[in-house]
Length: 397
Image 1 (cartoon, one colour):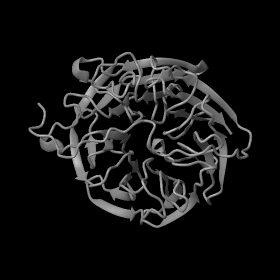
Image 2 (tube, one colour):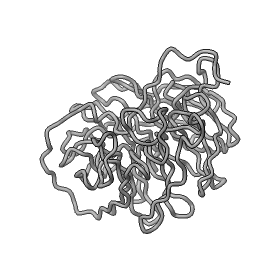
Image 3 (cartoon, one colour):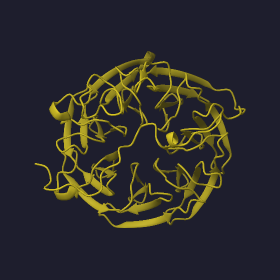
């Protein structure tokens, strides 16, 4: 049964192409970058998925697993908006670039299994993958699901199951914490805990719009961000639900963090802001557990712009990430940044090899980096022929 009434605030459907679409710029001048080995592994064509907006995960079987926001075999009116194709997929990429679609969302009547998975997957200790859908489900406001490596999907929770959607709606990515439970956020402004059996507890309503998942730090607490108009915050929450705001961005030091945080080997947290900074194109920052902020890099468009994803720390101690715009062809970049803030552009996308990456990177067991672009590639056109459907890529610095 759904709630007796809906919340007054309607959800904002995120588009996988992200905030960069609101900005148009002249073509950037080419910039020098060291030689890299870049390979496009998959070109999405709509039928096999479209617009991958989330990072990949490497499974224990060494294959890569991910989601596409659109595309796939099913395209009912519930999710076929603005000419987009399909309702999203879960996919696997095996050795030799072979892509397998494990699940097509909206396979059940009224999209009871959810649609538009905006976030990626996490492989849990039981070997299965857990994730969320932005919309659909029994109440139309998103789900938490479990899927086996062979593609059997089980819906664990349907959001907006409580009166006035007190449990939130439009969930983001999950993490599995040390206690074995999963933690996540919703666009409605909640932080929740959910057991592997689907029992959900709302820990706190944080007031902002958390667009990314959480990270559990070595102190056992959870850290995250909210994406708020012209500002945004970094917050800490205990597993019991005590919330502390560590930082409020003021625009000059960054704005609109949307990629999530990581805790580095030095104990500090690293992340990006999608906007803000002196140039307005976003930043890379470091923040301590007590809220002391250091801006490591301010993007200036030629070296990238509007990073929607966070960064990862590689085995060599440096950080790697993507920007959704900017670079030599104004279609996004892959970058490396040292802990002291020296940034190197490793790759500028040119459209045919992908463009507009909204997701971050992972470093695989072979030491190489893997990621997705929401647009570009050589697949069939999506969205009424205006956008190309995105890619999976590998880069070996």
